[in-house]
Image 1 (tube, rainbow, N blue to C red):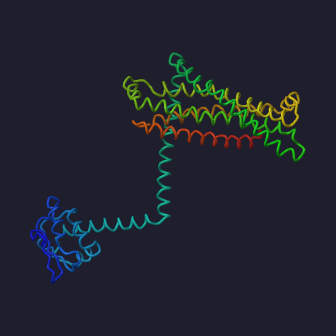
Image 2: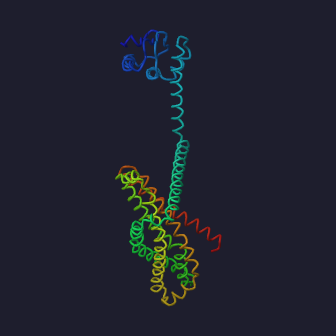
Image 3: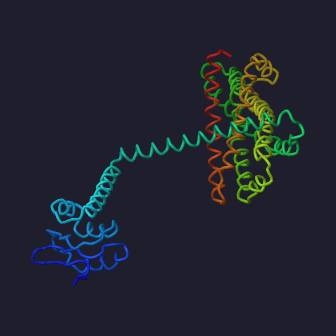
Length: 373
């Protein structure tokens, strides 16, 4: 039988009488009392006249026992309910209604899609604000450091030039050489059908001098160097080295970011030149081996390609360098104190840097086309 100090059940009238103090300290006793009432009974009335105190926790027990819809009808029909207790029940019923509305909306695919889209837009907006703030901080620090040569970190600068640039020359050259050969093969395959195989040289020269040379170098640095910058700075954050720098009042941007940006600003144009040269050599290898074009003839055709295409391609290198360095460093600063976070942000920096490089290249291509350069 239910505990009569809290609830009495009249099976003949199918009614409940609530009494005593229905508060959180009596929650378990009230719950036990309600469980002792046969579950197959339908409650038609509830007597609230003996109810002294009530809170939301115990009111929810009544709603769960009789169902929210039944409780709403019983609360609306009774006149014995204390106004304060009525407010508590109505507040609880509104919460149930909101929960049901949210559940029904969440079941609709379009609502879930819009919710996910909104969350994605909100997150990307927040990340964009962080990026703009970081770029502004880098610019201000750069303007403060440049007029003071004593604050230039030459050791760090040369170290990153060697790691990010010189060490990447072999892989950049090999990749560009192979892609130059592939482009020449494809061009020769198509142009042979029109008796214009000789224009394969122009295709390779134009493609590498204007687009592929700098783009291949930037893509390789986006994968190789951006990830390296993120991992290095992220490891420093996990090891609390950045906190130590902050305590010693050392500027992390001045010490860690600016040397990396300057290193890429110098080395990416150099790597772009190496990539362009290697691509032209790859095209030359195919042209000489498959198209019966002599080295002298290849160089003669190459000489006729305007040099401005090379400068157009090379002019994009500094922008790519800044974007790659900033993304790599920023993702490193976002790392939290865990090894997993380093991996996540390293992956994120590579993806973002690749996307940014390709997007900038597309914008630059449209710009130069409109300017007829």
